[in-house]
Length: 400
Image (cartoon, rainbow, N blue to C red; front, side, top):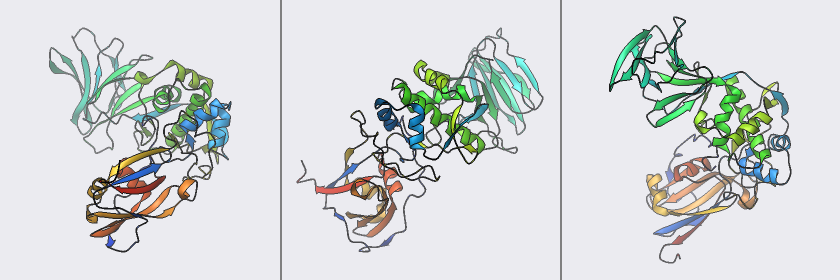
């Protein structure tokens, strides 16, 4: 997606079993010292809503509801509210550190006690850190040193009421609405993770502008808001952990907190407040990606169908069709069992669109071994935009 637009599919395997050399006849012969030219369509897994397709549909006059109904055929309409628990992935140092501010409150969940933190200590930061398996140290930074203020009997949380709290992570500072919890991943763990708990609608304010340009057509941004709200509601119903329900990366959907909010996407969220797509009595699994290249790919649910997409190919979509040139040595390095790469044979496709559609499986033929590889693994290890691929190969000495 931009990547900042896509949700990537998870790589399920790195390398298939290695067979003896000569097990497959190359579909594309790769000469020595070659460039492999890869033509492709789309960016991402292609399940469900295409973000560039949503913009193309909006430019043709479709409403947000018509857009999501097209990309998730067979789903119904419902509503969702409440709160959501989001793991802050970048905060991976076992501490939850926030910038000091007026109105900052700390809570001990086990003791059921809360304190409004003092502003007369010269504190610039407050921190929850591990004191013992069942205890959390609450300290503050002043004059360049950390000072113990209290020891909590359990997990802790920071909040500032309706105001955002700025979290300090190893990657930098990000402000968040709601509550920032310091949680044990399990009852026996001595580690801590940071979890942001906030309303579903406020959560979306940090998701939608990270997943689609807020300046795009209002109908497209509203369609993204419905898809993102539904996705979060589905994940909440199928939580990833006992202490959080969804992550903040492309493995779930990208979430940037208060720091990512934009007035145009806020307006789209407000215009679609509470709206979700439903299936079989619950939220649908509304996967989305940057561009489907002109064909949706079938996913894990009945409404994630393979269908031709007439909206994805508008002139502003740089991912509808693309070409990259890869040095054959890069493929040899990724699959070292090959030796010298001699051929590439696509052994199965999904049957939809140009070249027979997305690559499901292929065989890399090498001097030493032939290696079967899934299309998703090939795409992932080479950093390609999708697995809808077509190959040609040219010796570097003859290539222009």
